[in-house]
Amino acid sequence: MKWLELLQVAGVTLVAAVTLVVLYSLGVRLTAIAGDAQQKSPGLVRSLAAVCFGICGLAVLFGIYLIVPYFGK
Amino acid sequence: MVALVIALALFFDFTNGFHDTANAMATPIATGAIKPKTAVALAAVLNLVGAFLSTEVAKTISGGLIREGSDGIHITPDIIFAGLMGAILWNMITWLKGLPSSSSHALFGGLIGAAVVGIGLHSINFETVLQKVILPAVFAPLIAGAVAYLCTRLAYALTSRHDPETGDKLTQKRGGFRTGQIFTSSLVALAHGTNDAQKTMGIITLVLIAAGTQAPGSGPQFWVVAACALAIAIGTYAGGWRIIRTMGSGLTEVKPAQGFSAETSTASAILASSHLGFALSTTQVASGSVIGSGLGRKGTSVRWGTAGKIALGWLFTLPASAIVGGLTALLVNIGVVGVVIAAVVGSAAVVFMFVASRKSHVGHHNAVEVEEAGHAVKFSKKKKSRKSVNNKDVQR
Image (tube, rainbow over all chains, first blue to last red; front, side):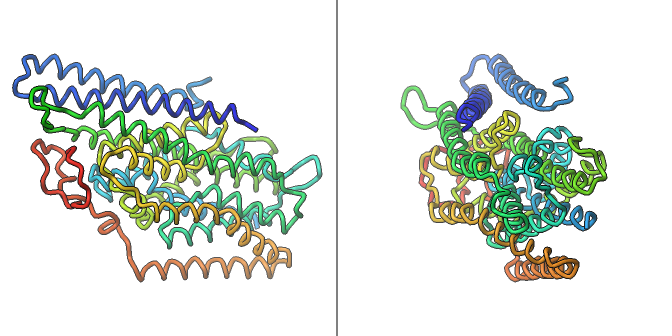
């Protein structure tokens, strides 16, 4: 049986999905905070949110990079 | 015969496409992140791209499922013809019923049935069947569901906002997830292309090798890749609205953050599995994710009745398509007349099911009742125009 591979797939799935969701959620949260009226430095928070979205996008691109054999050679 | 099999394989690819559009696009359509027509067009393009991106899966398709080589057993075009017939018919039936079922299992089932009848029981490697079909079928929804559950919980926990003094709920502002859904669902469509289009490529290559027009052990030729990519893209664009309805609103009410989590889990699971060698079915992963995300959000209920029906459909996929595949193999064994009968009966059945589907038409206009609020991505105030009264959560 390929229990090890099954475990591997489950692990990778968990790590990848959680990373993306956490990053994106943080981005959404920070965007929301930046929109608050009493927020003192909305610019800073907004750029933090952009960084979160950015890293999230990079993570996705890295994932695609990993699976396309053309780049793997 | 070779030409017939290739045509049939491409048709299978087409059914695979419209059967599986739902996996990627059901949740964004349900939350109103993308308009239905745009969604299927997007999915079609990404399936096309995905099919070209990687042909790794095509090389290993159905390898070892049927014992080849050493025992002198050869897969003939006849058997593949019969197997495809089984797979296509089962795909059509489940589509008519609006059940998301695994196209790969239908394909495996058809091939197994055809091989048992055409060659004999000894031609099947049951250990591989267990390993490649049964176990993944059990674990795919479990893994995807668990991950989606966790992700949904996380997404809601991270974005839930309370007033620090009064403890009242603030405007949650989760609209961002709706935009995010466009990307995650695209990723699922891409994953589907890198995965499912490959199966047909593998089959056609197998036929070409069996017919002696291609060297054994070589990868799919370019025209095969192109034809399969196109077939699956057209199929996707045709849109399996019935299954989209089941996935998008039949299992649970889907909210953007939840859909985002479900899609992320689906994409991760498919990509991880197809590139680490433990193939999971796209459909089963996607269904698992939707259910998992439904469990993860407070105030949602999962319709276990529908889930049960889907699970039942999965149970029947392999045997049912095996039976059809076996029957077709019997016919084909008669000779040319049998092949003709099988082809005619098969097409008649497909046409019949298509006609039957017209009676209760499900199209892009009525596949999912999109909440009106769902259209307003830029909504910033509290959304009160919700249609779904039955869900009592105050989170949004």
